[in-house]
Length: 599
Image (cartoon, rainbow, N blue to C red; front, side, top):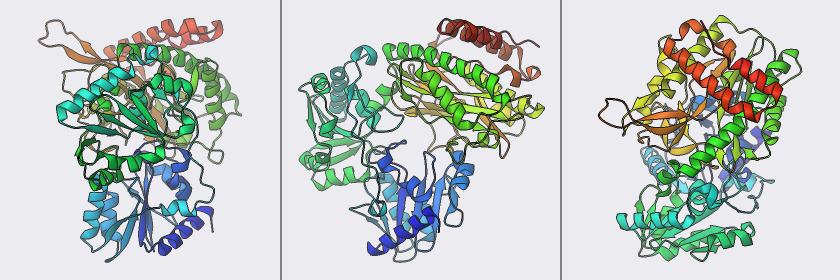
């Protein structure tokens, strides 16, 4: 029996002891985070799945793992089909599957600290139709059978200086207090880790690749706040920075503290606050108001200091990436390089800037067939040699104190095929269409998504992931509330209007299963754009990312004059802005790769 098969069997034994007929294992933590600390990696430990989004359901005789289109191939590589059914979402939801598979009278367990109230209601309703019951557990049964489960990180908090943050925490908390007055609430529970970090101008190291700390915050109508964080994380510098208006408590005191909100009207974000928080407030006699976290939109619309910081980080990061692109172009055709060795070399180039705090996510270093897995995660076991005739895709980013980067480039190893060039150029055309879009205020990402897909659609092609996500300021590389996507990819319709100051990715792609993958990703800043003769100020994008786009993969005949002009102007900017940060040989290589593309 394999390790993961044994773990599945052990969980079934534990469920039997707990008088449960099933259990739901999501990939999240008590803050509904996308990326979680090692202590919360229950799904990976149980199944072997290494992706960043998924859920498992275990019943007595069957088990299923649910992933979206980004992981269709990856989940089958990493999880045993003998033990698990593979179910795609959103075509089928976890709740709907439970309603179809749970037995009459079954007791299906869930951890109320790992699910939203909306999910609980959906699952409860689906199970009730077949006579089954959804049961909250006091102790997670996966934890009971995980003997070497890591402890939560004990990394200390650090201060994000006002000079980098652009606004003081007191001013941010005063805005939240004003909002509480507007909605008639006495307090708000902030559960999202990046919201807490941004609001208090602190950062942490509790989640790999995301500079946040495990904490909760309650902000009151007078602008004061209660921060719940492990005592060992506090330093004198952080205490001085927070001041007397932020009272600090042990993180373990958070759940009991919710009882002190009796008689209060408490705003709680149903997307980030787990079911248990709503339950505790209401059981104490408080009124839980399901309202969006008041920090979310303010955090997403970057202030001028944050924007300037991101531009600086983009230049620094682009120089490191350009050095890598030269290295991979020289070294990969010689043989001897692998997906892991290439990722390590890019990490080293970023570290040589002297300003890298962390990567913004584990690099998607993928050659050949692995490139067709959009969110491929390379491991020692999966790492392939980079060989001639392949496309090598590298999606990576860095965490710098002044900005978070995320960029994808594709490099042909040897001579690309005509099909590769065609597909790459269609992806490039979609990338340019989105980068140059002009749109009125009130436009949301769903309305712009087709710009990036149309050149692929014209050839009967598409890609099964969103086109763009928000990016934080030395925070999460995936930041809400805005995104650019079809309604079917990654959740509900992306209906959040885009606003000046938002930073989003532009990353159309194409994936040929078993052969290669293509994605071109830059980060975009939403800006105002005055149109000569126009009747209103419009919105547009400024491209922030600076790195050469591989010219050997471009089928110039497919580009319009406008697209070719954009490409050459972009490359001229890349060379001009990155060359001062490069040595003579790297600068000369970059100049050659950024010289005008002609017909």
